[in-house]
Structures are given as structure tokens and as C-alpha cells.
Amino acid sequence: MKPAVNLSTVFRGLERDARPAAAAAAGFTRVESWWEFSSATPAPEDVARFVDALRAAGLELVAINAHGGDREAGERGMAALPDREQEFDQSIEAVAEVHRQLGPRLFNVTFGNLRSDRWTRDEQLASAAERYAAACERVATFGGTLLIEPLTRDGNPDYPMRTAQDAADFLDAFLPDVPNIGVLFDTFHLAANGVELERAIDELGPRIRHVQFADFPGRGRPGTGAIDFDALEERLDRVGYTGEISLEYLG
Image (cartoon, rainbow, N blue to C red):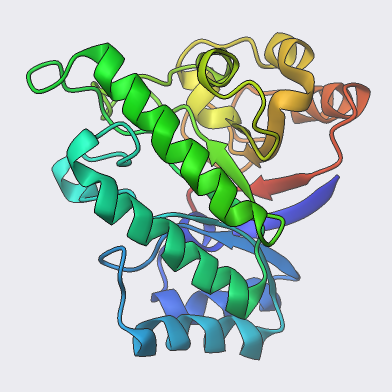
């Protein structure tokens, strides 16, 4: 398993382009990031500043979130929103460009809220399946993998992915033969939703494509809450997980 750190959470007190240097000074060589731009089509010069900061710090970007819509307005992704196809597609092209410049192959693409006042649940699930399938085909051209992340109930009342099993069930039902998509296993979000983490690892096995560590309660660094991270690492090793484990606590 490979250690990494999330620039957007652990170093959130710093300006975006100052975070890579701080991560390097803290001894990290591998990092991930949220989508730190205001839209799915950021200005090239803004992307260039982000890229230059990472290169200057000598860091490897291993994962990045795709643009997930208007976060301040409560949006949590666009895959399940039938009227946001163009913006979703632009978001995938944007992470493909980041890959071209920095090489990450893991992309967290949040599902989107279910809005029963506009579409039926089946319509939204079908939209998400179609969008994820197309995005998987796009990132497969350079060996990329998409991730679906469950989120806490608090602050995300319309988001349907609460547990890792929710995400796995969606994949089994709609994308069973797509190899380059899987579950993002975030210990804080899952524990906050009452998931038994060790059991979930055993049940999901190869469906887990990326892991993020933050303690619960509090979303602090490992050791500040109640999660037994040594036990989780043992379980991950037991099921054959060899990917990233990124620290995503709130610094």
C-alpha cells in the first residue's frame, strides 16, 4: 500500500498553490487534491499555476477530484443530473488534461444528488450509468480509473451513496463489465454513516480502488478518534489491496 496526503484538507489553511511546498516540507512525495478550480473549464493559466506548484515541490499527483458542480449550493456531482451532460463531459476532459500534465490516474467523480422534484429515481440512475460509462471509456485511453465516493448524511441530504455497498450495488446493477471504476473507501464518511469498516473491507474486496484515512468522530488525523487504523490496514492487506492510502483529515 502506498501513502499519500490530500492537499485540500490537510493543508487547507494555506492558499492552493502554497500547499505543495508545505506537503513536501512535511515529508510527503505523493499527493491528491480536490478540484480547486471554480468550474469544469478553468482558465489555462490557472491550471498552469497549479501544475507549476506541484512540479516545483517535486510531488507526484496520484488522484484528483473532478469538478462536482456548485459545492456552496449543495451540489455533489453531476453524473445523476440529466440536464448537466455537457458540464459533466467538460469535467472529464478537464481531469484528462490534468493527467496529461501531471499523470494522475485516479479520478473521484461524485454521483450527484437525487432530485425527485425534477426526475424519477430511475431516470437519474440511468443518467449516472450513461455518464460514468462514457467517462470510463474516455479515461481508459490513458489507464485511468473512476471512483465513486459515499458521503456523510450530514450536509448531503439528497446524496444517495451512503455506504461503500451502495456504490458497489450501483456498479453491479449498471456497470458490471466496466473494469476501470470502483469505490472510494473514505473512513470518515463511512464511519459517520454507521458502516462497520472492517466488515465492509472484507465484503467489498476488489471493488475498493482508493482509500482515504481520517478519524471519526471529528475528521481529525488518525489516532484522534475511535477508528482502529492498524486493523483496517491489516484487513486491506488481507483482501489484496495494493493501492493508495491517502490522509484526508482536516488539518
